Amino acid sequence: MSRADDSTRALHEALPPPLRDVVDEFARHLSQVRDRSPHTVRAYVADLVSLLDHTVRMGGRVPADVDLTVLRSWLAKQRTMGAARSSLARRAASARTFSAWAHRSGLLPADVAATLASPRPRRELPTVLRVDQAAALLDAARRDRSGREPPGASSVTPDAPTPDASVPAPERARPTAPAPEPVETAAAAAGRRPDEDEAVLLRDQALLELLYATGVRISEACGLDTGDVDHGRRLIRVLGKGSRERSVPYGLPAQRAVDEWLRRGRPVLARPGCGDALLLGARGGRLHPTTARRIVSAHAEAAGLPHTSPHDLRHSAATHLLEGGADLRAVQEILGHSSLASTQIYTHVSVERLRAAYRQAHPRA
Image (tube, rainbow, N blue to C red; front, side):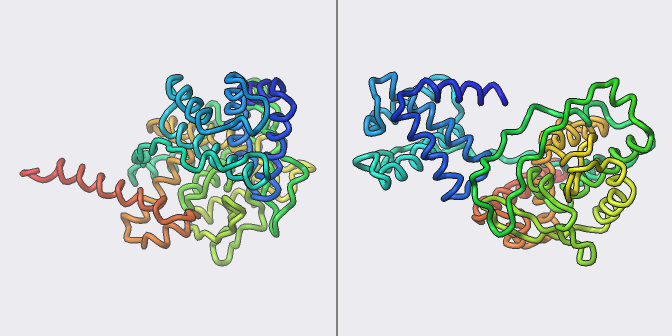
């Protein structure tokens, strides 16, 4: 459990019983009725606990004490503490969701947050690799197979939160948080057999190729099972946000990397209990998203690139698709965006890159 989770738990336990109970009821509503992901539930609950802690400090003891004055005071305090505009916007959204639910449930006399204003987050352009940089990253991963894996790529991070067992499964169950593996020390990594080293690097190659080829989120990639790969049509079946399922195509390089991993790498790392997970950690469990982030970062560093995250590869895949002539609606479908507005940010990226190339190349720019 992270330090932030510990802080939220401590604040939750310190709330008066009526407020503590409403937090638990709201969490159940989000997970069981709204079918929100564990990550989303944690974020909304943390925001609500912070709001109710502020309510108590202003003299409140029951849910009905949360009013517009309390909400505005809470957001103002967050702003003075240095919260970013995006964080304030998210917390205001959490407050509006809670207020609407509490009003429908009879816990609030009115939907007090319906008129709550929040700052519009700045729409910053995402970090995007050039095509040659993406190629360098994938080439570096292939070259690494002739030696040891990049330092830090096999490290594992703190425990993932345990999903709520009471959440009903959709038609295709949302992948649960991968069971965390013990942290692998440098000595343990050095003691691996040569075939295990090779398997880890085959896994890394498959991960990087899939991320760039499909633009999937890192949680979606780590949640893939072997049965989600349609080798004949070169498609993967992805379960995204809101339990929305989509099929995403991938190309020949990704196909070769995945086939090689399944043929020569996965059988080496697989352990009893790993199930059908497509990507495995060095100890045989389902690959953890945070470990995957370290893998991407380590290989980018080995390729001489600036810090690169899996989401940067997602941004890069989308931008390169648009620059190659792909339709915006098709890119929206590939990325799993519910709104076209989320995809349109990549058109701005392409325009900015075009302007930069013009300024650099045109004699009268």
